[in-house]
Amino acid sequence: MATDSDRVVADPVRYGQPAGRWVLLATVLGSGLAFIDSTVVNIALPRIGTDFNAGAAALQWTVNGYTLSLASLILLGGSLGDRFGRRRIFVLGVVWFAVASLFCGLAPNEEVLVAARVLQGIGGALLTPGALAILGASFHPDDRARAIGAWSGLGGIAGALGPFLGGWLVEAASWRLVFLINVPLAALVAVVALRHVPESRDPDAPDRLDLVGVLTGAAGLAGLTYGFTAWPTSGPTSPTVLVTLAVGVAGMIGFVVAERRSPHPMLPLGVFAVRAFSAVNLVTFVVYAALGGVFFLVVLNLQVVSGFSPLAAGTAMLPVTVLMLLLSARAGALGQRIGPRIPMTVGPVACAGALVLLAGVGSGTTYLTGVLPAVLLLGLGLSLTVAPLTATALGSVDERHAGIASGVNNAVARAAGLLAVAVLPLAAGIGAGSLTDPTDLAPVYRVAMLICAGLLLAGAVIALLGIPSRLPTQRKEGPLINAADSRGRCNTVVSR
Image (cartoon, rainbow, N blue to C red; front, side, top):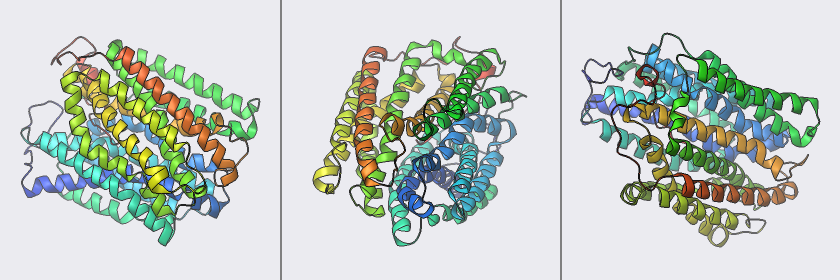
């Protein structure tokens, strides 16, 4: 029997046994579905825009429809798993994701595609928190770290292979296969999970869910996203823009009030009393806002402006993944040895330099001379940044609050990417232009990359001023928040 109160498995599985390998297979494939889909869709955007004659807002919503529902509901997904059973909610999320993927692949127009993407994000929010929670609950304590390491490494390999697969499917067949291929993979995950993954839940999970927090948070993100996306074509004085932005601001204020007053908050605000935790999440917000813009626009620009094929554009950023796989563990060890402040300052500065180089990518740019140097510098900068950032987010609070810290940090990262995709084209001057017209996209892309570089430099300054040179040794207990609030909010580290 696992000793932690939130891990209720009669016979914990061992890493080297078949039962352990089945659990690992289900969690790697399940979380890989949500992660890969969020990246390869960017490769398909030019073809989607051409097929549907879609404008900039429709392409933004193709990305943001998924991210909005995922960011809004990911903490709720963790809570549902703790209360009703992690395997049950995980399988429900996988099946939901598969059905929504089918709707995406068969969508007759852009409106149906965006609606299906929103549904897909709900499935992702249900399955994503469950993957790591299942590993922690299912494996014997002596094998948990090894299982989590294998999950992370295999997930990284899946993330590296995703652009190859997505680019090949778009180029050789149709963008629709990017979604339809999820259906048989999800069926495999569901069968393996139902047959081989033990059920677990948190016996101390609150009886009530923080529905007010969920609704206000979702309304806030949706209002802001819709308002900023509609702004370029409708104008800042449009009643639609003004009303939706007002709803967004009111929703975010309502979310803070709800979390402050709730006896069982989805996001206990007490964690932000720790200066280092607040600082690392502010760094997370600006850094991942920049990255959201980069991964949305770079692949699009390579195809529309530079004339790359979908496969070539999709794999252009592959060195970033490879470098992070090779160097992140070393960067984490470096951060532990010298403290997180220096890596978290130097890393974003290197990334900003990479984006200045990427801003010059245009018509006639070749990969080896015009793209690869910037991508390599970006990979080095992210390798320096991400591992110390994650370690600081988890290490700045008491050990028993690590689940909350992980969930909050990942929700912040996803919300930042969501708002970046909505705001960047507006800030870069897209106006009524098209993201699939090279004449319209080229100047918007250049300005957007420079804005993202500025965000990364801001992240470096915040890290320099707000991140401590050394983190205190974690305590097993502390006065930060009540134990009842800390159990199983979202005990997962999510692939971003």
